[in-house]
Image (cartoon, rainbow over all chains, first blue to last red):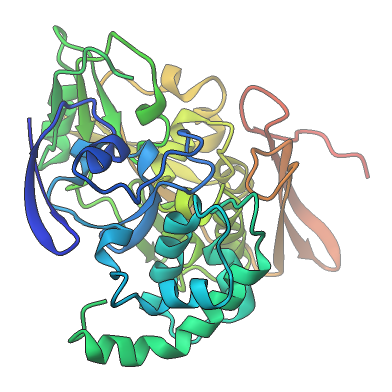
Length: 162
Length: 228
């Protein structure tokens, strides 16, 4: 069957099987930021934005995303022009092995897209589904809080595109 | 994996969904949030019926109480400003105890109620509130009190092709208070036990008390006898 959706702002059509899982379809489409961790919806490494909501792509049927807007880390920033969250993760050392980073960045982006002044508790809640087993949790909370005030300028520079 | 899945349907009306689900030659099942269906290993399912285009996402306050659409996500319930007071707080607290943000954005109220998963933290709250689900089958609606829905597994109560569309929660009597607690190994883990409580005071005495539990028995249950 055909799956039509928007991937990182661009319309895309893929041939999929009705039983395909979104995680597999995205990785096959080249979105290697989408990581397979637990593969059962617990760890958050595969999180992507589906119509603005962060969800575990390992427990989403690909066919369900017909006409949806999907954002992965590939759609957030580039090495030359990182998203404020990506830069903050670098500046605050919120990465060691990096495997949980894409999912954490997606969950953090979902928070900052609707709340530019989050409290520490709001950051903790937004990232409650993203397990990290090496860096720990303090540095990434600091990174998200540091990125928040930079979102306004980022939106202005990117012409409002989040 | 659903190895033999051949069709993925997006019905545009409840009755269309009902007729696809009622087909006799093929086995078609509902997919709501997909948290369970996506992990199923089942070679007998021919088709999935996705309810995402049906108008089942809402949280309304009515004269009688609250009405919540079956496809509303746990996260939408958890963050709803429409739900307040002792009744609304209990519902929001139960919803907020389901898994993580990433899970709550997938989990739907209807799926959580009907399928009775290990992560079904909503049923005890709705049981304590004397709620009822509304369902549609063969172009007719019916209302099923939760006490009846959980008298056996909901799959034995719901007919082939019947779709739960919303849950209705009555207003609490004045002087009511509620509480919800989930005991689990970690915040994101399945409950070891969920406890939802609603009490109502009259003349400084407990006039009505409802205690609902889940995860300790096969199905969510109301505690029948209380020891004072």
